[in-house]
Image 1: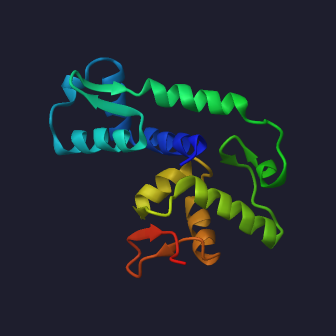
Image 2: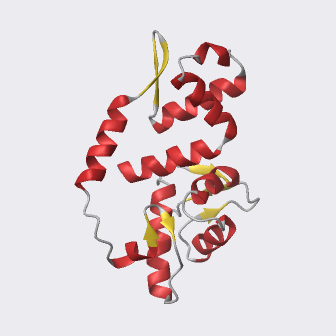
Length: 164
């Protein structure tokens, strides 16, 4: 997963109040205040899966290496906006293109930012990630399904990339 995708996952985690609280306590050096509740452990594991936190012998700590690598990648990136990136400011989508071909390319780009081939996300998880990109998450989800870029389970509970 690219460093850009990591920032989308981190931003999605920060939108979740429980995850934000858990991260804040760890960063403040008060991770012990989290206790061992199921929700706290779940939130810490989600941060670990993203790569932002690491579980050490001394407790949970920030993954400085991830931050350094991400910042180095960002500073080396060409900032000129061409192609589909002209529709974005950073990770935020400013407007959907009117041309169907360009819209499809933008939706592929968004899908690749929020979902990997191995993942199966619940709707609320996908919504958290899409909210980092655009406020109308339902529209983005619908376009991704309509463009056959993601498949939704028949009961609507999970989303994943289509099987080739």
